Amino acid sequence: MSAGVNRQRIQALVAAERESYIARHPESARLAAEAGQHLLFGVPMHWMNDWSTPFPLTVREASGARFRDADGHEYVDFCLGDTGAMFGHAPQPVAQAIARQATRGYTAMLPSEDAGPVAAELARRFGLPCWQFALSASDANRFVLRWLRAATGRSKVLVFNGCYHGTVDDVFVDLVDCVPTQRDSLLGQVHTLTDHTVVVEFNDLPALEAALQQGDIACVLAEPVMTNIGMVLPQPGYWEASQQLIKHYGALLVIDETHTISSGPGGYARAHGMMPDALVIGKPIGGGIPCAAYGFTEELARRVEHAKRSAPPGHSGIGTTLSANMFAMAAMRANLEQVMTEQAYRQMFALAAQLAQGLRDVIARHGLPWCVTQIGARTEFQFTVQPPRNGAEAHDVMDAELEQAIHLYLLNRGLLITPFHNMLLVCPDTTGDDVARLLSAFDGFLADTIQKQI
Ligand code: PMP
Image (tube, rainbow, N blue to C red; front, top):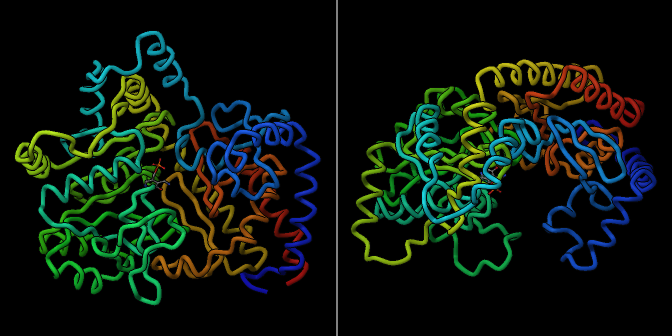
């Protein structure tokens, strides 16, 4: 037994749930087999095979907080594209904006009329005056690292153990037995990433200061709350002290709000008075249409401009042809102006609080040593009594077997939560009844499988 669960019970449950899934999804099975003839790994994106299901669920359509699969089953979606659809699937204003743009061109290597208003709105929201665009948060992070290395003349970046910032090679360095080590799951990487990436534990101020003291770190790239290894909250005062250290040692702070935009219309940093030098936001910024943005302070913008002007003409390694295309700009404008509103956040916060408290109550009723963390619209349960303080602790309590059993059980009952950890999002279309259904199924899972055996 571990995490308060009986492993044999879990394995028996998973076997039964897999059979039930297979029986309920003949059309998804047929489509997966057909697609598998010409798709590597049978899926358009290799990790789509890593879900808890025997074969991928094929989505037919998605709207608001719901989607329908190819077999006609309806689901309440608490995954919401792992934040890409955090404001609901196909929100009306975005749908209308891209429909309007659909007959007016998509990409021209020139700015559209939406570019100025989008940048102005980003500046208002996030408190940073100068913006650029990318097609994904991965790209935005990659470009920011490049700009900041160029602007500072320093080669190193500092990240936190267990972080994820997209497919940015530089940040795939973990602490293994306190030694910075290239993540061994990273495929085809031939450079020695530890040469230019420094990694320390989150919430460890002495380690951060020791690293910064070397004077060669261009920037710290961080989520303000770690969200990709389960959730790790900053301890009280951590960011205030960290920001002082970063400034003191002449490094820059890049805050990646791609997930923590769940904290409010201006992200976690704005909500908590942080003053980053640069900020990255991807995924939901255009309602799920591929796009991302990054912003700089005035001072950093001047340094970045100087770096660009001082460089010889030619490829900068920053930006891609379709970045800032007209389609993405139209989607961002509609989403920022009409969907990601204060009112939407208020609704989401209230419902997420209900969800988080409900999960805590169910967990307590079953006497399990699990915890629940909520940042705005994002809630995570973890298999530990004490919320983890850093990436190593968060990693140690991850439990793929248990996690997959819960996910599959919920999915078979029409409820989707985020794969690869235990994250649940609510969107403006999620209802109190949806939350009640989720809590009841979660309770059912624990009652059916765990409590009897403890
Ligand atoms: N930053 C953070 C914090 C993320 O969680 C992710 C993806 N999960 C990314 C960046 C990269 O986003 P994308 O995969 O859309 O490039």
